[in-house]
Amino acid sequence: MSESIVALIPARAGSERVKNKNTRPFAEFKNGLLELKLRQLVKVKEISKIIVSTNDPIVSAYATYFGQSVDGRVKVIERPDELGRSSTPMSAFIHYAASLEDSGTMLMTHVTHPFITSSVFSELISAWHAAKEKGHDSLVTVTKLHKFIWDENGPYNYDNSVEKWPRSQDIKPLFEINHAAYFMPFSRMREVGDRIGNNPDLYEIPESIAMDIDWEDQFKLLEDIAAARLSRGIDLL
Figure 1 (cartoon, one colour):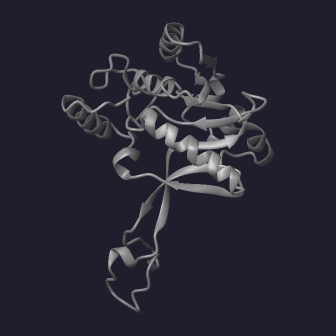
Figure 2 (cartoon, helix red, strand yellow):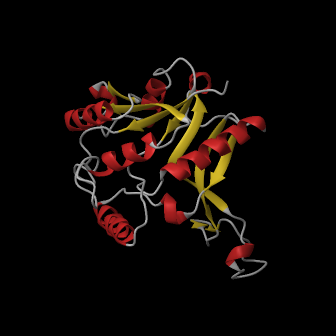
C-alpha cells in the first residue's frame, strides 16, 4: 500500500504585502485564493487529507464550511499565534508542521500559486513516487534559470573571460525554488528539521504555472491572467 499524501496549506493571518490575500475575491472565486486552492486539491484523488494550518478566523471559518460541503478530507488546525506572525522564522513553522501527522508524506503548497491545478498536483505526486524509487528523500519544485546572473564580483554562472556574452542556452542553469510544492515524509522532516532533505529531487515546472503572488501588483496581474483564461474556457481547477 502506498504511503498517504497529506496536503498542507499554511494560511496565516495578517499578510502585510497583500492585504487579505487568502480570502479576498480572486477572478470568479468569491472566497479567493483559498477557495481556488481547496477546489484544486479536492479533485486530486491521490490526496488522503488536506490540512489548513491557520490563525486567521476568516480562513478557519471558510475552510471549515468548505470541508463540510465535500468529502471530509479537509481538516482545519488552529495554528498557535506565535507561529503565525510575520516575524516567525520559517524553520519554527516547519518544525511544527512535521508534528502534524505521525506518518505519510507531506505535500506543502500555498494558495499564492493559483495555476498549480489538480492535474499538476497529480503529476507532482507521480514524480514524487518516482523520486522515492530513485532514493530521493524529498521533492521540491523549481524554476530553471538560463539567465545572466551576477553578484558583487561579476558573472556568477558564466565565465566572461572566455566569452563576454555567451548564448543564454549555453549558460550553466541555476534552479530557483518556487515554493509551489514540497514533498517529504513527516518522519523524515522530524529527522532533518526541514522541508527539504539531504537528497532532494529538484522537479522543474514552467514559469507559466509556477507564477506566484507576493506583492499587490502580482495579485492584480495574476487575477487578470486567471480571468482571461476562464473567459477562454480554460479550467483553473
